[in-house]
Image (cartoon, rainbow, N blue to C red; front, side, top):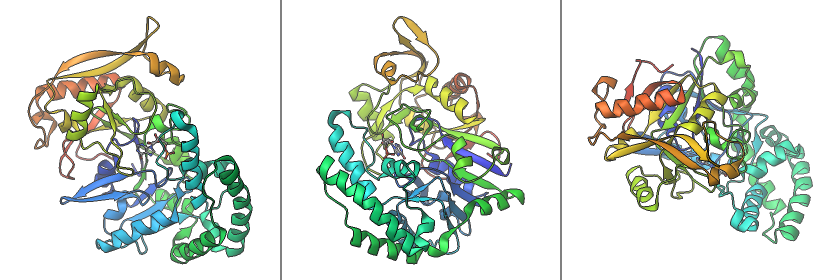
Length: 429
Ligand code: IMP
């Protein structure tokens, strides 16, 4: 199976970083196809923690080639500081990082607009990461974006920047009453970024397709989760890209027939950061307990994540829209001490039970989750390495999760380290 897409099936933070890291060891090429510096993939190697925002997790494996596809929005400042941080820790990206010429760049004014919009929204805030993601994708779709290839053409960069700033600064100053962006400062900064990035910028669609046609293993690393997808998520409380598997095709320039499989990553319970509906959200007390036990703080913003019971209704939606064939369940160990566990199987709304995730976000605010209750296993699973050795009640929980979401559970993560994984097959590809 040369081409494998890995996607989150909830609201992001499912633990994709660890799963992708494990898969990357047998990949020839590791790619990212959407999102930007809003992502935060945490990987623990020999008790050393790495948090990657933009660079694919594959970079942590010596000699692996990594690609940032055209669907990714790149903040050069964040990218280069990530490169420097990796270098300080002995990991070089030299010859191992490629950036699509068509990838759009996040500019300082995108971050200012992101912040200014959130301030203006007051009580209707989306709770964005303030990384300029929405405004960068807005400019992409509005056909005024600045792309990586423009870094190679100084006169194009200058002209686009000048034209964009005229409008952005007018908006920032007059509509948002916010700070303006400085043309000369940006130009100087982006010229210096161009000097460092120019050798990485290329036609990455060609590279990825070449790898696939030679039968090489290509991993497509999704960021965020399906419920943050701009089309299939809890709109408008979503990010601005297609986080579902289809995004891998458009975000890298790869035809759908070239992709052989889709692996979903699902946390054993549910979390979300930012605002927006969350039907299975815990009471305050349980929320705090899980947050502490699961270390549920945003990898990018350090914001506390909201926690709740496993919601099979929303994962079923994610499985369908991404064509997920297998799932990896993460953080099972976080549930070790729970006396009883609840799984949401439907939503009761106006006297009827809905088994499909609704598109009308307002329904999610007013519905009541319908739960099935299972007994907890009350023992640690952290040292378990095979399915058969999992406590019977843990297996019952996983079986029920698999049954309700309609796919096989191929792997279970039982702790943060690389080795804390239980695989159904010896190989996830
Ligand atoms: P944005 O992507 O910064 O515009 O934020 C939009 C929404 O997506 C907010 O609720 C964020 O908290 C959420 N979000 C963005 N990236 C991530 C992520 O990597 N994990 C979890 N939530 C995210």
